[in-house]
Amino acid sequence: MNKTKKMKKNVILDLFLTFVKIGFFTVGGGYAMISIIEDNCVEKKKWITHEEMMNLTVVAESTPGPIAINCSTYVGFRQAKLAGALAATLGVILPSFLCIFLIAMFLDNFLEIKIIANAFKGIKIAVGLLIVDAAVRMLRKSEKDRFSIIVTAASCAAMLAINIFSWNFSSLRLMLIAGALGIFAEIFRKARGGDEAE
Amino acid sequence: MIYLDLLVGFLKVGLFAFGGAYGAIPLIRDVVLSYGWLTDEEITYMIAVSESTPGSIMVNLATYIGFNQGGVWGSILATLAVITPSFVIILVVMFALKKAMKNRFVKGALSGLSPCIIGIIFATGIFMMFTNILPVTGVLSFGEPNFRALIITVLLAAILYGLRAFKKNPSPIMVIVCSAVIGAVAYSF
Image: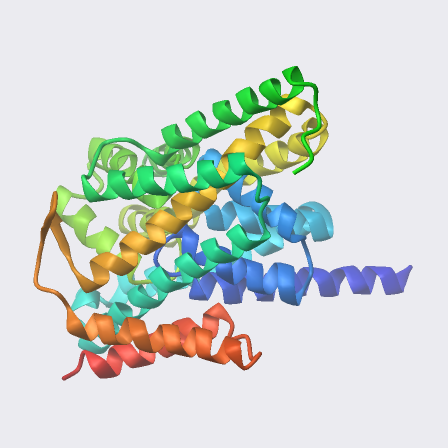
């Protein structure tokens, strides 16, 4: 019994440290974090499966709050219940908490520090690349029936148009439409007599 | 009382901030301005700082404003307040989802949502890469093309996909570290 207790402690420490690492390198918004979480939690540690990660991304996007918190809470909970969820979530916010804390205390002119500003110009480029890479990887592992391909292409085109023309149309509405389409497709499939082997 | 304001204000941000940090900025601005915690200019500056530090923008803003208004305890309180709603909601939704997955309507909705999210992420990444190289200044109007960014983009893509071609899968973290070094060097001249 002592041994299982010790093992549990190790899992919690592992969760905490892994998410400290993930939190430290999450720069430039939530999407960049998807590839870091996939790399650490799906491929290296095998804490969750790719399919779970996909569902988690969907749920994280359709519920309020930062993706970072959603992901760490879920992965932590899956491994070690509430203690795991707390360890992972506190881990993921610790680096940003300390950074902002230091900036608030000492660095009024943080953005004027040349070398940091320059490094972040570089990081911004990597973030764009990593986000595209994450999308490609998701695409490769996703279902490739006609419906999915059309929805992916249409959402991508719509989102690009929203960005280019700075339309006031949140991605959340896009997701609502896609979800509704998914339900209609399901009803339609049933009405046609079920399994279309694709 | 400032602690109560921080708690309520950031619970509100955490509870209603849908659609990632950028979608949430108007809401954050609203809450922060209504309490008079920061001026409009300070918010813009802090968003820029948050983008250039690890962590999500919401959490960073909460920490900063909390510290400004209520010192160490204020920052801890505001940070915990902003993450609590998503902490609770994700656990409830993910486990409800597991059961609901047997329902064909839920499955149908997911079958539409998943490809949609992939499309959105794709578009976001492409647009980000594009604006780094050719800054977008308005609807269909662009600034000077940034050749340094173009070269860095090609270089990073070469590192990522080159290493992958040799079966040495570089971790995203390594790519970010490389990009920071390259950026610090390349933009210093």
